[in-house]
Amino acid sequence: MSTARTRYVLAATVWAGTLLVLLFGVGALGIVGDGGPPDLMYLAAAVVGLLGAAAARFRPAGTARALAVAAGLTLVAGVVAVAAGWQEDSSVVDVLALSAMFAGLYAASAWLFRSAAPRTA
Image (cartoon, rainbow, N blue to C red; front, side, top):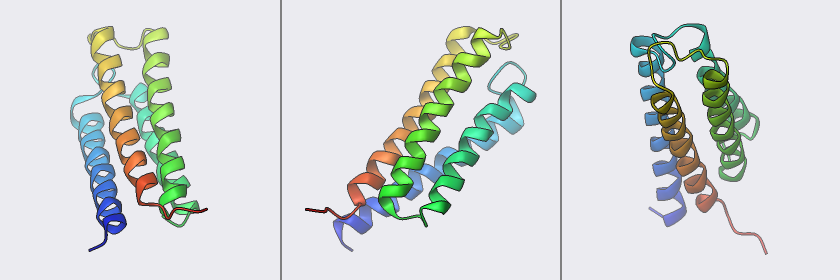
């Protein structure tokens, strides 16, 4: 298997794992407090990443851009949740740390996709 293909598979694996953990976190535990409508912002960021990747036909460079946007939106979701005071029983640090973790995983996947993209001269 080529290096680019290996990176693509690894990127897709990181992305899929991130989505599974996010869905479990939102569905079972809640990221912002006990869950509910504020957690939909995190799901919206995931949907934007998925739709952007689909629009790019899951090509590495386009998927990398889509996941970079999803990472940014995930950070924005955490900041908005804290600024609006939606964290309820959770601490501000917990909400921001989880947001940074998910954004970091999206960013790592984006970097891997980008490194799998063919080089143009």
